[in-house]
Image 1 (tube, one colour):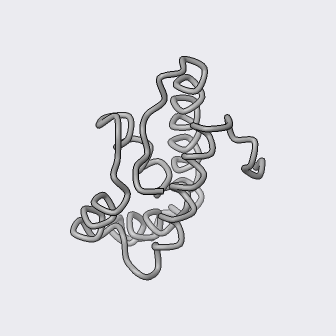
Image 2 (image 1 turned 90 degrees about the vertical axis):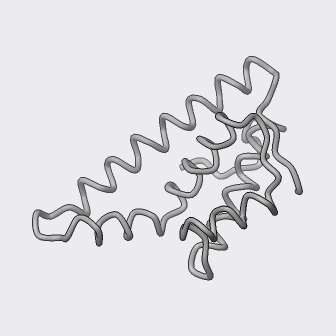
Length: 113
């Protein structure tokens, strides 16, 4: 998988927009669970960034904005932004695969949460 393109199929377009909302809501729920009133805001932000949900939302948001992503070039951008490292590389690879599956099959090969 070298390139991911935003779908031209209206049904898949809607599906990805729905997934983006789902990821955003899930991330907000995670933030609320982690924020016990005593965590430093920067620590909380770093904890959230180390999640599959955050990576999927980031990739999907950028894919929607740009229309297409070269995954190799994009991974370099994420490294430069501090979002991709050894700890989050697996999240990146899995997220790209899941998003590509939603585009190709509507998520037929993804596990259901």
